Image (tube, rainbow, N blue to C red; front, top):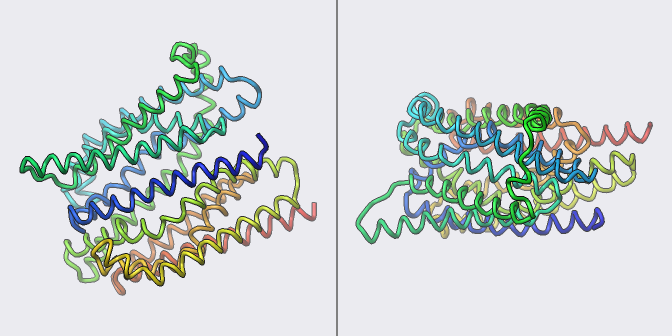
Length: 443
């Protein structure tokens, strides 16, 4: 399959999957908001920074490193070695995930009290901890298939995960209604576990179905150590970047309800506002980014290949074409959300506040949808440290708006900071890529 066809096919599959899961997730959020209220959704959202941080520590870096290593091995015709890398990564990440599970359970109350500032999160964190070993298996196998440039299994597993999550929560809720049992938002956390369990079982079935029994892919101890060193060498910088970004995001998420209280809101009102923003308005804004996320996933290896060929004309053309398409998509979504945002908030979420947030956040769409692809291009040309710095600067601007603007202007101050951060990332990326192409043309 040609490079162009592989990109188009992979983007098409990932986009369809992204839209399907976001579509289901959108109405799932509506169900959660109607069933558990704005405060319940806020409590549910409050644990996600911890979820993201733990996932970054256990799986995220290894998945990307495995994808790169597998791609290299298969290009050289070393399929057996690629399968051994998969086995090594699964064993390592499952061990790390189990340790993370035990630590999170032990310190759940401390994390909830000291960092999340709400003791009710402790129970949710204990339940959440059981998801990580299954997420590790799921992540490694998806990384293996991305390395093979086969997006079918990762896409299908993503769909299965979302369906299992939603279905399990709904069935538990219906069971409770029929038997007079009232469940709290903790069943939504249990749904996360159900999704990871079922999707990891699907991935294991898919990978063993490729004539890969566990006996065939089990490496000897020397090769296990060699594979582990290679994976760690690549994954430690990636993991460090993801962890630092997640720490900054966690600080932001924890600080928003507290700064809203400094603005004059009660604890309940602050948590409700946070739930409306992160559980209703932002998912609506992010819905169309399934397209740009898919493009970004397929774009990174393409840019790397063009750079290796030193084809500056093609590099310049693809950057201009991708940026133009993403800005056009974002502008169209901005106009649509400005017109329909209030209706979406009132009709679908039964929350006028959500509609107001959607209208304000609509202005970030042209930059938000383009930034993902720009960062992917910068990673593709090998400037991963620069992309990390750019993202960190954007997050620092957001944190600054939380600490300085929310106590004065309320949640509007954060929305302005969010717009400023996306605009900053956009400008930094554009200026750097312009500089990069100009330098390359002179060489």
